[in-house]
Image (cartoon, rainbow, N blue to C red; front, side, top):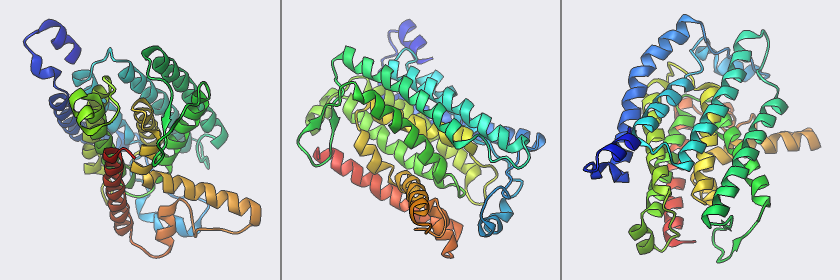
Length: 361
């Protein structure tokens, strides 16, 4: 719609305003997810697409989540549908960054759908094998890494990566492709691992998306970027519109995913959301800043990595249960307390990220 209006209506200068389009994208995605949510959940219930909380190796975790049994899953479809609708209406579909984000969402959405489908249809199955799922994520990361590397090379932006608190950037050259490959896979899995409590992953996604939308607008607006003394990337404005759409769809989904959840995101949602956030960070050249903004995701993923590594080496456990939110459950914290406190942490880290971004550290 945006591309059509701009090409056919020269007087529609307001639609060239990224702030206006971002607001409209967020509102459209929010309303779409609210309207689609009830219908999608009803269909999921009709086809008995329900969570099986018994599929866990922990008896205590099975008891803690017993009341979640039969809650409709794969609700991430709501996020993707409302996001796609908003992108079609308000994003410039000819923009290279938007094309990459569409591709990322489609690839990981299909991968997540296959994983969820196996869990639901194969008795005793925990879904796709971890190595198989990781292989698909790495292949996507490789494709995206090559695409972004070539894009930066042609546009003259280069592949330098800014290191916080250091005046020098690192220039990885073609190694950037490998770094991007693992970056996409890590962040996709990080959001997936965070999605274990009602509203937790989507709440942190909303905060991260809102923060990235602001960063994208500042980087994309020449006058603002010059005033604040940050590098200017003209195409970043389009990413601010996309992030706003992601925030809107996330808010609408949270309406149904807040405690007690009427639907769960499922891998179809969590894998794709994590991958899209990673691609936005790469395109904005804010790779390290996102690790700070998305600190809750990083802690959740690192807790699993540390738990597995230490257990294999020593046979001992660092946490009662990983990911981290389950550790707090085992300590006796209520689900809502854990979720809200991690939301607070996400908000604080988002604010800290903006401070560091502003200070140019």
